[in-house]
Amino acid sequence: MELWLNTNQVELIEQVSRIGILTGITTTPQMLANPNISAEKSLSLVMKKQDGPVGVQLTKGNVESMVDEAEQLNAFSSRIIMQVPVTAVGLEVIHALHHRNIPVMATAIYAPHQALLAFKAGADYVVPFLGAIQDNRQDSYEILELIQGMKNRYSFQGKILASDVRNIDNVIQCTKIGVNGIAIPEVVMKEMLLSHSECLSSVS
Image (tube, rainbow, N blue to C red):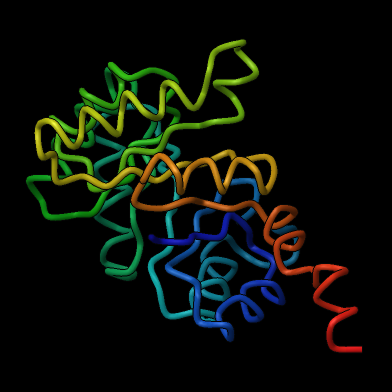
């Protein structure tokens, strides 16, 4: 089970890294945007605070420019995993990067058919957005189980990384389904790190 942290908060990254449970970091363009430092320096700081991979969203608008952007990021660090939404353009980018041996997370997955296309295109990770699926009044766990069953049935090599979890129960339900990993937002990770009241009473 991989535990990823969706944040740019360096203090939390350091804390979770010290525990030894952190696989890597996922980010958004908004997280890396800082009025005081460049996005490159912000990314470097996140990478410096832990040893794992860092997911970075590609922001260009067409296949050629996104592939160029990915190649530049890969040259900057081989620890960067490209985050690409599963659209028609995104799937073409995923396929192109797969053949260039540049790692990819296929993001913004709301339905099983998107995961199927991402697996077949060569994504290293498929990333269902559980909270957003639930916001669309769909059963996020049922969709996640369908994607997990698809991976098991056809032995797809890509990993399933559940994202947009909203609470601790979401995290535990993901472990019951058996996904490869979970990208946990900082608010949920902070809640998970809080000492349980019964634990505190037992040591007082």
